[in-house]
Image 1 (tube, rainbow, N blue to C red):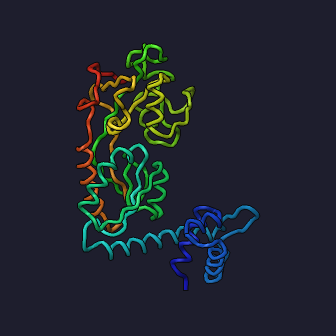
Image 2: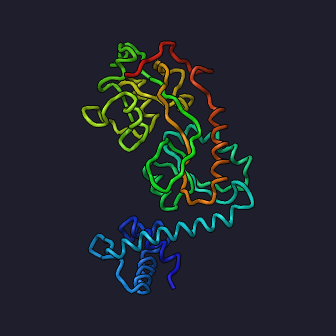
Length: 316
């Protein structure tokens, strides 16, 4: 009889195309995983994996079985979720994915509230880029993800929560390269500093500025907004910073100026994403309400120590 364990091991092999990495994901030894795959092949009466020196590939039948196994595992996971989480809202285990341009800014306000109000929830966090989180959602390795919307994947449902406006940050020191620019000039050419390829925030900034995503723009490979802010403060260029990040990334001693855009302000839509087949939609909507409440508690541009220039920048 085929077991869910065998299907789970084979699904890992199909994802990684590597027995060692699949065994590591499944927390078993490589020989144990390989034995389960061999038993699955014997029970099905067909070869699923072509074993080559240093690499493996799936047979044509193996590719079809891998897709069927993925669907069976998702159904099994949803069945368990349905049974375990009916009695109490936001209880049991929950795997939440978050993109890096949200996690360090919204989660510090969210997690204490979540712990106080839903102490029966066992939260596991996964921080990664959008495409990785969407892949893990589709495979059932995540329950729900917090990211920028919209997303273009079949089989997923989205819940918009709130908008996060962008502000222009540019250096103020006289000796810096961009200090003499007007805010409009600061957005042109190679002046705009962005996160590395793969971050949705980069693509959003380029779309707002009407700049193609490829070309002569300098590549710094920055993977965090903290690095970008330090580069701006040291005169390397300008950036678009999401408002939720300013309270943490903008310190009083930084020689930068912050400008608000003219209406309609460019912004990103923040929301939750989950599989349409998940039985935990009430949990996810409750989580969305709590995240929205946490966002309202964050410091906003123009209040407290976050000073915004009165000149409003025009896009385009």
